[in-house]
Image (cartoon, rainbow, N blue to C red; front, side):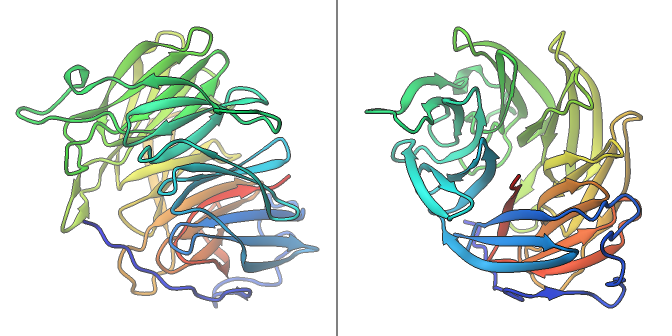
Length: 370
């Protein structure tokens, strides 16, 4: 059993490391236009939301603006409301980001362990359920009556999964991408000890028939997340964290692969040093990745298929420090460090640490509020 610990650092204040030029904002970097921002951070251990803002060039953070459910795993903003996927309390929590009031909470059912949500339209969303190995179509509208679970789509069973010799695995779905009338679900393919027991898979779902129409076997292991970007409209980017060992953690054999959305085939595979669990594409078309193995942002050039030098986050000596969530803004890259409870504002052109702010306990997901 993996036990994570952390502490709250710098709540409600901004901390600027010695090397940061605090007179450089606004703007803070060459491409930063100095606009105001409002950003929410879900703290996985503290089970709370931190509010980070830039107003008139000044950054600030305020902790514990609202409580979440147990183990918030994803935070996203959609049509004026925020959605939190609470993995251990088995729910999707919907709240108003202006008042921080929960307007409704949608249960996914006992023991489902929901991981991610993606929106089909203004009234329906797809939720991956890690333990029950299914994807749920749920009604997210405000006036729904009765059961909000509209459809259950099972992921491939153990007999259908690619497995190492002598190993039984389970799909264990996580990341989701909705592209037009299709949805794609990343499945880690884990054994009974929650370690990779074979290559990961991506399950393609037809959102008209709600049937599984394709299963794509990846070369990476522990396939956790998917990313679709209009900057690369013909590809689906797939991130696999790689193997995990109980004592030492992630081995560092992560993979970033791209699927051609036309053919459904893998056309690019990049081995990376680290454990990529999710990512964002910056304005420079560079893929910046969260990293579960260490406090370092992984960087990949998708056009050339090459891993670039990463950005190492400041270290404070804690165990389990890793780059746990990431956002790309014009001229800025924001990355949280899970165990030091900090948000780092980085110049994406060279990795310079521009500023540092306190978060809650175990920051694990971020969203920009528009």
